[in-house]
Image (cartoon, rainbow, N blue to C red; front, side, top):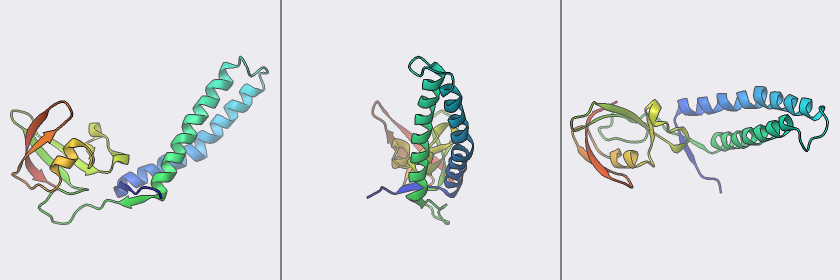
Length: 154
């Protein structure tokens, strides 16, 4: 049985766009590259052919991954007027002496810390869920632990 993929509506839309781009634009382009490389003759020493086949393999794997996300998605809706951090919440917090940081709690399929999205499965996501503004929370990572204070919840 396939595993549920928790994702926000925006994340699902991005996955659908990427899937459409790969299927309708990139797949035909790579097929053309393979065809052109094949016409050059001996495939055993044809770098262009092998590079295009390799690129095709990676792209097909990504298409399959995106199709699984689309097929098995469970939407993470923004929580209503809850006082507790939950999946879909945007949390602002501060570590002592540091600038305020802000992350949205999302599913692993769309986590991107540099873009302000952390997975509910990450150390940070697990630690924040269930807490409220004003709480001091300990974040335990494999190498260390640190404390943050939740200063806002959107």
